[in-house]
Amino acid sequence: MDREKIKGPQKNVLYFPALFTVILLLLCFCSCKSGAKVREDRLHAYLTDSSRYFLLPPEGIGKSMDMAQFVSASYNGQDYFMNAWVKADETGMEMTLLNEFGVNMGELSYKNGVVKFSSPVFPESIMGEYIVADFQLCFYDPLLLRGALKECGLAFETDGNTRRILKGKKIIIEIEKTEKAVKLINHLRGYTYTLEGDYDN
Figure 1 (tube, rainbow, N blue to C red):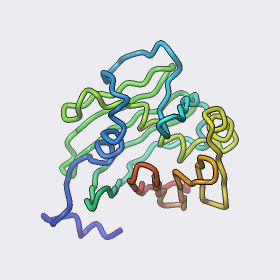
Figure 2 (cartoon, rainbow, N blue to C red):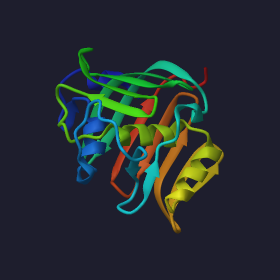
Figure 3 (tube, one colour):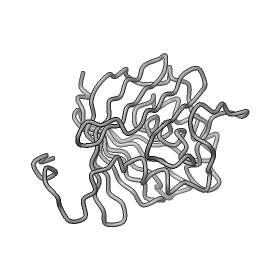
Figure 4 (cartoon, one colour):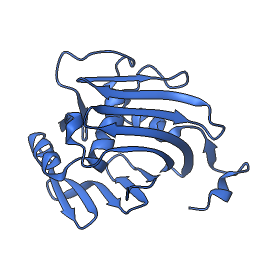
């Protein structure tokens, strides 16, 4: 991706950590207070209106990471760009969200069975579980994902570096992975985003 294109003002480009705004506001029907809330039931996210995906434990990650990621997202004719620093391993996940000036726009953690999400700009109704769920679909062990998705009535397929989540015969989420980028297309919710990083290490 040509980063020169995002240096100046452009039409239909918003410099805001909008990946998470786009994804989570689409799912605001599951509203609850964000922050350090501990759920009484198992942590979950709805991948469809009736398919409740229960988050896998941190040790399900396929490969540990500690890196900066450049994020580009698209929804409803708009393009969005942001940066994130992500650290994830068998003990948990931590994510710091940054705007184009390097200002901290939010923090997410998933450790010890608790998801915490805090931000000075996002609505309190945003649920960190949905960020964690998409992250797991991209980076967690395929065998574990297949079992967790089967539990909520969805199928999981892999074809080389491509992952697909299906409801019946319909593909609802598709993920394409390379050494330098991961692209997630949510056909059901209508958003796409690409994470660029050094995934080969």
